[in-house]
Length: 84
Image (cartoon, rainbow, N blue to C red; front, top):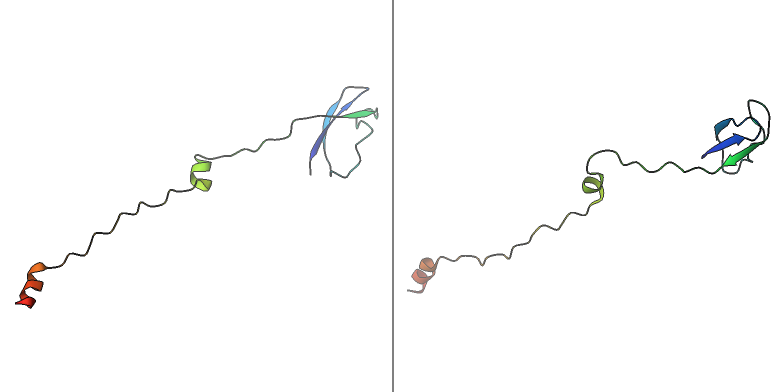
C-alpha cells in the first residue's frame, strides 16, 4: 500500500497517510479540520545494499574454458613388440 502526502490549505500542516490505492483521498486536516490537498511526491527508490549485488547475484558467469583433449598416448614400444 502506498503512502500519500497531504497538505492542509488552511493551516499548512503537512502529513503522510498510509492508504490503499482504492481508498478515497482524505478531505480534512487532522489538526484544524480544514480542507487538504494530496501532493505529488517522489516514491521511494530501490536500494541495493551490499557489495557486488549484480556481480554476486545476477551476473552470468562465463562458461568454463574447454581445452581440446589430447590424443591418448600409446606406448609404441609395446605395440612394436606385439608385431615382432
